[in-house]
Amino acid sequence: MPYIHRKRNKSLGLLELIAIALGGMIGGGIFSVLGISVSMVGVFTPIAFVIGGLLALLAAYSYVKLALYYRDEGATYSFYKKTFPKSRFAASVVGWWVTFGYISTLALYAYTFASYAISGFEIADSEYHRKIFAGLIIFIFTLINVWSVKGMGKIEDIMVYTKLFILVIISFVFINNSNISIPVLIEKNEDMNMLYIVIVASLTFVAFEGFQLVIHAMNEMENPRTNIPRAIYSSIFITVAIYVIIAIGAIMAIPFENIIENQEYALASGAGEILGNIGTELVIIGALLATSSAISGTLFGASRLMSVIAADGYFPKFLTIRKNNIPVYSIISMSVFAFCLVLLGDLKVILEYGSVTFLLVSILMAFANFKIHKFTNSSLFLTFIALFGLIAGTVAILYYEATTEVEQVYYTGGLYVTLTLLAFVFSYKRT
Image (cartoon, rainbow, N blue to C red; front, side):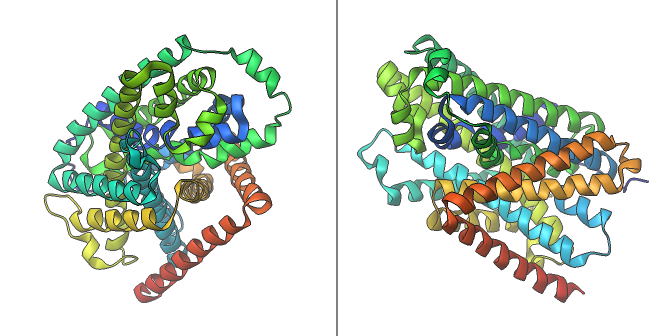
């Protein structure tokens, strides 16, 4: 039988849950990865986003099935721990990996927020000022998440649905002011091969990872059995649609060289040349709303995961402390580590590490779902397809890094080794 949990404080409805998922995805998506995607596959960027969305749907299938069975806000970590109860070290490793995956996305969103916030000033290319602004926005949303669940949910609603409206306007403005058609662009890029499109889809997988955040709100949501699948699947479809529309508008209206040169704030730069100051300000407002809601949603969900892991002894015990059911010290700790990553890395490094991490943990979730597919009423065919697709995506990133950015392999590998050693220490202490 599924696990039984304490009475829930039902503060979050379907709209809030969709907002949390969209906040975690869109804020880290089009504004963070457009420039990198265009620099690698050009006009085929929308196709890469569609493939990335398909990978997300494959991953989401197992998450939804496991969430409805276990009913646990610990999500990735708790699902794996309960499916393989004798593997203490493995559970600890999953917990450390996925938590720092979320921390890396916080850093990614904060970095992107700062890039757009200062894009209209002389300090636009100043790495120092970019990181200071990133730290400031992390601090602000730390305070908001510590304040109250209901307050966070309503603020998330306002930010997410406002940014969606702005993003739709931006995309159609770009399309209406296009200088070239998609067929012409395709003719100029006929030599692009499918492998690189798959690589870009995999590299940008982190832009879709926010759907898991819905599960971390298990203890604060209304009607989990109905709202979890609705919130997760609908948010992925909405995200893919937004990414594709904006990508099409951007590549038709903004010269590729401009997008590539100003990767950190590509849309704002392009809007300025096409629409002047009004266009630039509109894009910046959309970017700030998008990245802000991503920071808030990620911090909300991932802090609850950290608290659950700490309660099992795999993180320091003080992270379990809650005030009004809010894991205050987990929120603060995640914010501090995210700012440390902002100080140490750059956009592409953070992006690649986050994508590899969430592909790996999604593979583990598909494997866990396969093991108990009879209890979760899952399709073996869909589960195998998910395993194959997610493994292929992981291999694509590793191949790209090994052939073009060997130093990134060392950086990512070093992080995994460090986190695995820490996981071993805490699992040994617990034993």
